[in-house]
Length: 238
Image 1 (tube, helix red, strand yellow):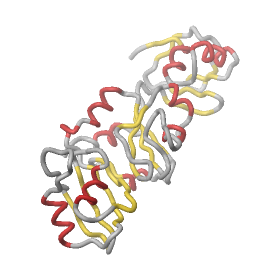
Image 2 (tube, helix red, strand yellow; image 1 turned 45 degrees about the vertical axis):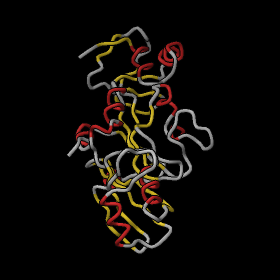
Image 3 (tube, rainbow, N blue to C red; image 1 turned 30 degrees about the vertical axis):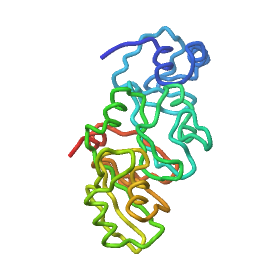
């Protein structure tokens, strides 16, 4: 339970600078739990707070945890260099909150991407020590063989790794389709493992992180949603 001035609350939620937030309030563009408040000095209880700004409702969140269905052609960077950044798929409000992707997917890889402004959460989710499994669907350039599957399961030696990396699960899903489960999260790991095992990855899609399934979120490519506590709990190691 805590109270903050309304301008501080708006700024913390990513609506702009303190000066801009004060102007919004004084212009009558902000409602608190359904009632317009035009004094930016008003002390507001943040617990259970619902703001309405420009007729759109936003629940107060100390931190945001977002799931994005990443399309191909976007970079997982706050400062993209060759393609649009994934943050352009979110409302500008989140840029002000300085959200960032949790880990990375290659620009041509699709699927589940987490985004947050909670530093400890980002660090924890990105740490290889957590051993959170991530599920991928890979389309291969060449047909999938039993030898390829066996190689992925027994361990593939990459030139910059001290020891072979093995998939937790590698199952053939079609002539050129594999489902692969990894927990290490190394750079370009699926693509590099398949290449080192004698095949190549044509397309790659991440369908799950831990117990959080992209299919359960009801998102289309390019869409996002907030993650609530019960969904965040699914990201814990098994």
